[in-house]
Length: 118
Image 1 (cartoon, rainbow, N blue to C red):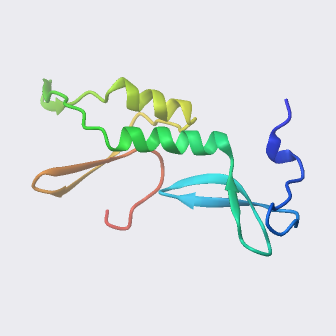
Image 2 (cartoon, helix red, strand yellow):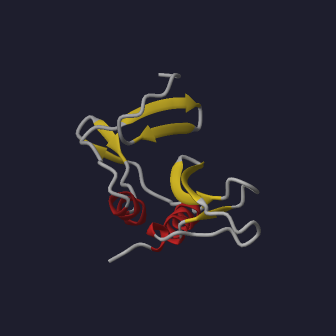
């Protein structure tokens, strides 16, 4: 099936052919086309939907229990988050990075991107 972004897209303001680009928004790379004249930008609808799904999850508070597993404590990651990550084809390694940011915040990082604060 052909993607609509594979077709030539003309800017409705300038009538110039728009060029393919990538827009980085909150860590997401959104496919887009941009006019070289007026810089008008159109993002791919599928990428926009994915970004909106992320924002819906991002603002949601999940209440999970802290459990003892052997000599360690564990929490479960809600299915909605795991499903979203798998849908985005992100590789979830067996190990994740865990950082104690302050007295009330822990940060989990999935993937291989290293943060300079570690």
